[in-house]
Length: 251
Image (cartoon, rainbow, N blue to C red; front, top):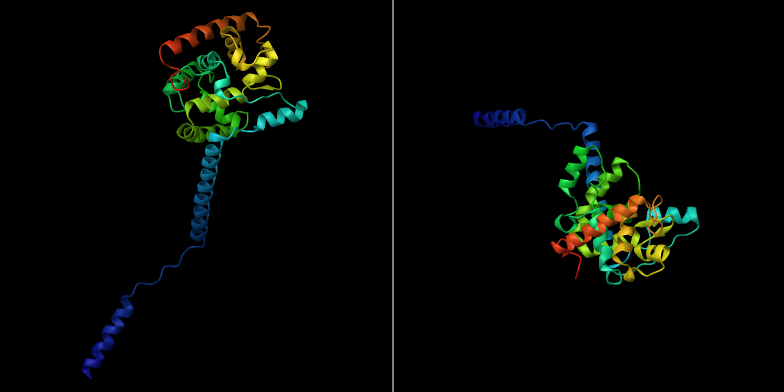
């Protein structure tokens, strides 16, 4: 009998020392649910971006947000897609010399150019050809921080999947050269009545010179500024060819 009482006492002690189940606060479950959906959404967006980048590595982008809006406003735009081997090599070199001389030496971001732009209190010159291509293909024009953040996230993906030659090919085919004129083939026809493959060094330099402000500058009727800028670009194109900074996109 004493043994039975001892067992009951031990059992009671165990029951007394058993930890009580913690009650979960209502807000904790909601936070866990929101976190789960946030991760799931982020993963889905990332996979979508990677899918689109892979797609356009082999398929030419049919249009973009800005081109579409301009087409609606103007009743259509001029654009004829041409492969890289149908674009005069001097045009590719001129665009790189004008917009991103270190194009072959960075992975989407020119840290030195960004630092210089910040020190100068300006943003001109900090955006690489890769960043501009990402903006033109996948995003929209504007200075909203969310667009810039998306550009920063997508650019490394593009650099990892596309070749430099592909980046430059797409850039030259969707850049705006005048109101409603997109791509180097349409620009060559529009300004000089030649194909992109027949552009001279001077013509290529002038097209590159108007890229920052295509609606305010003319390649066929250049201002003194455009003439001066074109001469600098022509010299820069020769320089980057000589020092090997065109190796990543010239076959």
